[in-house]
Length: 421
Ligand code: GCU
Image (cartoon, rainbow, N blue to C red; front, side, top):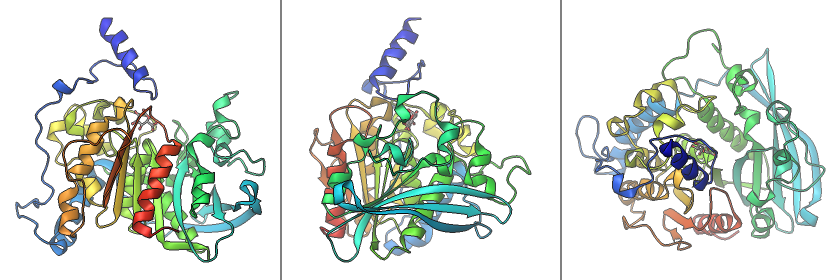
């Protein structure tokens, strides 16, 4: 009983979804002495010494490991078409500072169609192309801004908890610093992640996964893609759309994801090189954090969430963090030579801030191969002491969340890569 009460308090302190459970470690002295899987040694034991060896041999090997054992295989999407319908355009959004567009994406496999709604804000008063942040929201586009013209997306009705104030218009404006983003000359494109794959059990038929050939016809394969794979695929479809927007600079696309979307942003960044800056906020287990630290959330826990986020093969590593043939520093390294930023919050112990830092730190050797600078010290920086190298990192005070402080640093980081807009 004592253990359970203790776990409950710890979960509350973690500032995240409440899952009371024993066996979650928050004691740094209990972190095992772990040995990380090699980043620059191939499966045949050969050392990687050049960018071309990395790109030709080791990167594909690692990408295949993450595909087959963790995030799942993205199926061939040649049978899927996407149409765009401009639903609204408002040149005086955000008090005149931005032009907003709402664009319906209609995904079709020829017999079945699904819709998703994109909200795009483009800064006014600037000429030429602008860089853009792409990111999913959790509670609908209407939750990100107090503007009655912003529509509810179709899947909102499926996932909304009736009467829950947490789903009201504007309820997550704190997570979307639009005034700052637009003020600094960035565009921002957001979509509700439920539109792509509803994150509630029993709704897979409403996910884009259900449009793909073979869906529901056969038992799931060990590497069958699940929610994270679908979210990553969906963010690439947002990039396809942005490429049709004359005001968007497609060489300057950043993806930002928080928490489960921080995991999905890393996977999207690994798969799609059009994301030139990848930002993973409080992504924790299955994201930036090293599993081998066995601190905070475990593989057992994250792989038990329903609907599944990871492919079935990942379940074999439950309770076997030290036996995984790969760990998250190798995922972060897949972004190179593009810029990657990992952000933590000190009270977000469930996500293991130190593990997130070390995940990024141990990706550094690949950045060095490119002549770039990753994280130079295995010691974490202090609170609000961001590092802005080709790998960037900050830890801020407070809980699991996306705050204005985070956005300001994300923009500083993007400015460094893209040049100030
Ligand atoms: C849960 C889950 C985490 C996830 C988080 C979120 O806490 O255990 O892995 O990151 O939800 O997405 O908010």
